[in-house]
Image 1 (tube, rainbow, N blue to C red):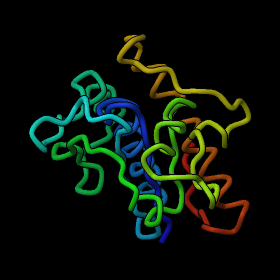
Image 2 (image 1 turned 45 degrees about the vertical axis):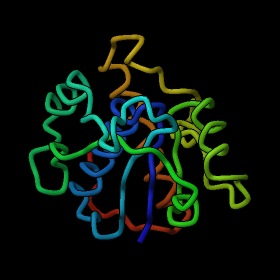
Image 3 (image 1 turned 180 degrees about the vertical axis):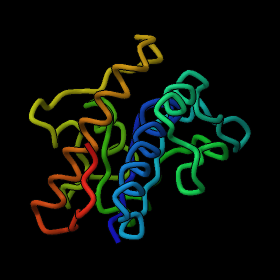
Image 4 (image 1 turned 90 degrees about the vertical axis):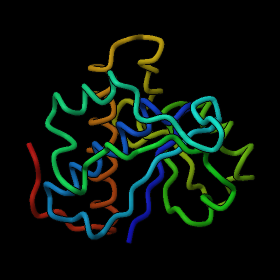
Length: 171
């Protein structure tokens, strides 16, 4: 089982989009039983009285536009923001952040990255970079495209490293 945790600042845009985009990709390839995929925030800004906010409506709309959320595995209706914990570091194999600031803030919570688990999602791509925050840019389409690039690159890397075998490739 490959355990992946996506991280962004508030866990209402980039990290839940990443969570459900990767879930959609692995489900379409028939390898969802090889993964546990979740997302979290570095901040508590989207968590009130112990209850996290749902995925930001424009992020939900972008996922729906690409037909993500229509299966039991990709249904994001119950997703609520939560903050990353120190225990998450021991539990997850890969902690994939949207940007460099998320890495710094994750390490403040989890402790030093002694196992080199914490990276930016797009570090797996041919063009490593931060994923722009659509909360500020307003461009959820660009964020979606960047996340897809990162998730595809991550899956390719896992396959190259021999961690998974993908027989159903998606175009």
